[in-house]
Length: 133
Image 1: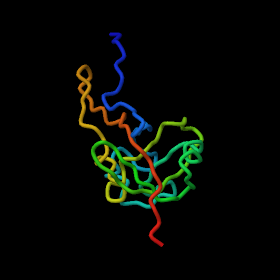
Image 2 (image 1 turned 45 degrees about the vertical axis):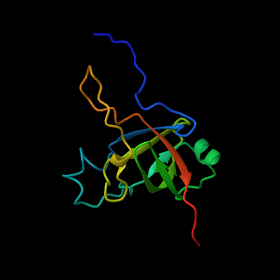
Image 3 (image 1 turned 30 degrees about the horizontal axis):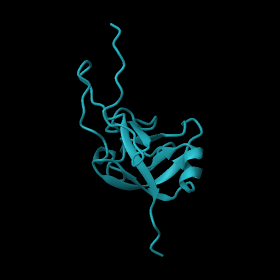
């Protein structure tokens, strides 16, 4: 049944200008329980992935440590670039909570029609971590 589109609850603002989406990676079947005990050449450590355009605009290089902050919390992770992402969109995997607990950032809102969580639409800011050296 067609439904009317409703924007995400967690609105983008000047303070939180980037839309974070979460998901799975190919190397970690489902939640990684069945594949987590095995080495994979595809497995990446916990990180955030953004467009090269956003990386340039934020003054970041691949591998830099960044602080990802939402209205609920913040974490520090390395940043990597992916040309398939449009500017303003970021991706984090759910597979490495011990390295990058993305659930500290996501929202608790639920879609009233589907009954599913709205954790794929979190507004965040991404800033370089200041070096202490």
